[in-house]
Length: 197
Length: 197
Image (cartoon, rainbow over all chains, first blue to last red; front, top):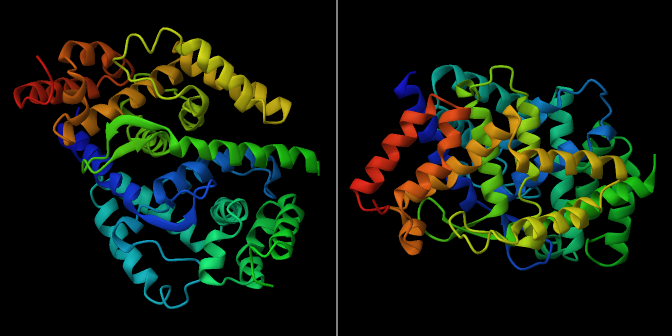
């Protein structure tokens, strides 16, 4: 067995430990502290498995979805987390993230670098059923965190319900049965003052 | 669509946020703080995908391995993390964890409760190729954390190399190519004083 190959794989494992230091805007559901990207990623991978039956695409490759989700935020080790409703931060997001993908996936053996970069690009492009369903999980998750912390991050940033509705359109599209659930949650969030009308 | 079913699934998503509060003995690779179970779980799910080519069993169901790993520590929300080398803590571990599985997986719709409990039991029993390979990832991971933090948790607990070797036997068995890598790492750890001879 190729020692150099294992060495590269372990170097990648070591490098991505950095994801545990990337803080998101969302708070843990008990409000005690902000969540990091590694925690978020674990949570949405479980959600993808759990809610799979609601996917619009019945022939969804769920293994691909989970793989995609597990690595989709790795670029933020270099590029940082950009808050979903931060227009300015999004201006150079793509440039920062592609450079990060090059460096971080570049630690892998060449075949895995190519395959994992492709998976990340597929997620980012959001065109396949797998990428759409993965995006639905990624976007639904912080909404749950916000709802159960009485809108802690939403209130801190003065987020409006329309912006969240727009961002969550992919949920009803990729997992139709979750559409009414999300709509009800956002309505309740506005009623309770967690989210601006 | 069954609103009650989605309600149960979301209640489970909310409940397992608690995994982010379960601290392990291992430190993050930069030594700054202890790792939690959600972070650990994310990391080993990525490792399982990354190192799959080294699995002894070529027909491994990797989707099952990843699902197993993503939920294998959920019981620790109630039962707490038991340090691998804590003999006393292991005495009533099984009792505590089965009670936790009953309560936490019991939040799910009945069919998912049955399937996810079975997956957890399969992991715990460690008899199938999927459970063995999953255990290899789960055990290799804290060794990397210990090695790259110069044995921070090993030194704190006075851990001996023989105990680690015994615990890691499953790595060489379930992923033979990783055997020499692990053996070399432990040798170096002893030489450098990270781990007691």
